[in-house]
Image (cartoon, rainbow, N blue to C red):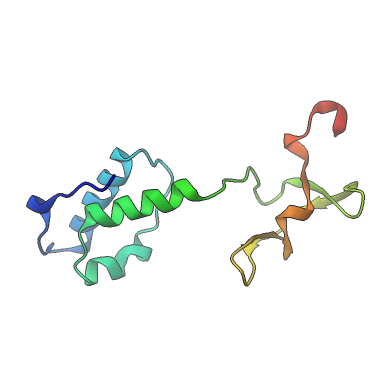
Length: 119
């Protein structure tokens, strides 16, 4: 559902003013994660409406798969998924697929999500 806020479309004096409106709208749409302001500087320079950018951002975030993995976590890998692997780096490959230590995440078991009898 696309909402329009035509009354608020204008040239914002500073990026901070634009970003504050953007953050408020993102939170109103239900996203509570962290947001880096530098990634939206181009939207402000192109005079995009912060409300529309917020809607696009929240829609993208809702489509993403969230993994319960952090650097330092233990995973199980190898042929039989019994080799202990510590997460050193989380990234993406050439096709924007999530990776752990340079290998696709689909090749690991997440130990902290396993039942107690399977750890």
